[in-house]
Image (cartoon, rainbow, N blue to C red):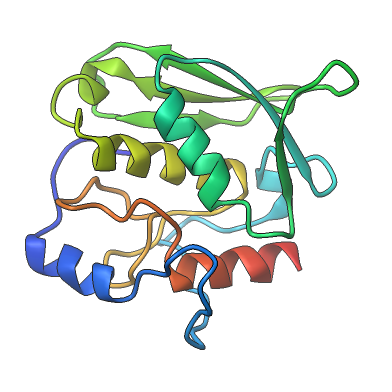
Length: 180
């Protein structure tokens, strides 16, 4: 997730009109394409089978719990790591002026979502921006790619003014296509 640049308010408003209230019946929309050079694949996710177990060492509990809630769309079980399971994903914090509000890193074994306090305690310190970053990065952990800014999506490459804080109808269509 790039922290630099914001999409115009008009683009954010257009996206807001297509947002899906979590759990509401979605309008019949198809999945959105990936930006050039990216693809969506189960193998490019943190999901083990159809389960994503996570643990956190992050001060951003509200955004990460929100992300888990809004991506719990029924095809992949997203749950905290327990005594009888092995975590697939860990949430971590770091602080660096590197142009990223957060990022997902897939590795052999445990994958990581890093949330950047340099931006989340600065330019993106509002609740909506923090939630957007966490939802976007968990989208990557679920195998989602970046989307062109011509499609309403939490998977845009930039943080926007009044950002979407949950998957849009298009994001849900991409999720269902990937995990059906």
